[in-house]
Length: 396
Image 1 (tube, rainbow, N blue to C red):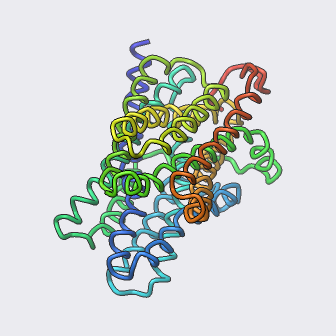
Image 2: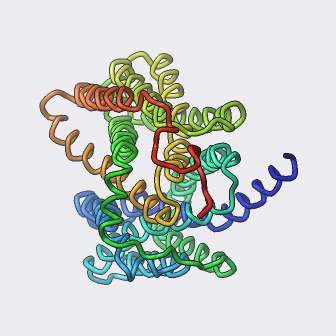
């Protein structure tokens, strides 16, 4: 077992060498657009360009089964993202904004298919008993990257290097592409269109929970600063709450990997954690004026996020055909992005009617209802899924 574990850690470490610069580019993109475009042309234009990123992510979800995509390996997908990042960077050179908009859309679309192929490459290198723990550790690494990205952006802005943020996105994308040059650039077999539609049907419970997670995390990010302003008349506490939430996620993911990482992934556990996150965020919406309590609930809510991400990723090979793992992980990413887009639209409409606290509470209760329905539907052994072995597998 120690030898197997060391192999798993080496595989995860090699994978993170490519995944980390890709994630930095991905996480920095909307932040860089807001800082650079917002300062130059106003935040309305920045919001428009930022919205093109999740639109690209969602649009790519419907294209993952097309032959040109399925025969495009990791380097090709990262190359497309690098092209998008370079196009986005032209904004700082005074080029027409539609070129930057096309770059933002291409970054989003590429992120969906890059994530799918990256996940497939990692899962194929892991044994079934190593999968959940390794993905939990990766979720922690992802949260650390998410914490570093805005900190790095803030440091560059404070140093007067605001315009270099878009260049940093391009450099990170190119870095991931160069680091992937030694990776095994295999391509998944092309599934027939009916097989892809069947994949959507077989994974519908997982996709629904992924949408709910995106909706909940998106609502927290969008509501943190307005809630802080409403409760304390200062925006600083909103950023602190999000940082505390991220730290809670790191701790929660570490604990999950340490004590629960050997358990097989179940839809029941995922639905339960999504319901818990929704309940905590409903409470969070009621407490912004009570600073200590609000920050404690922020940490508790965050502690569920990395385990949710680990379970979502672990359930793909447990529930769906291995030959379609790249497509399935792309759909998983796209459905999460769809949750973000939905909540951005819903909360924008609700803010003026019921206030930020009411909007966050309504979204959390709606998500809690959906998670409870999924929890009740999943109240059966995972072994009843139509797998010949009766247990998750990660190998074709």
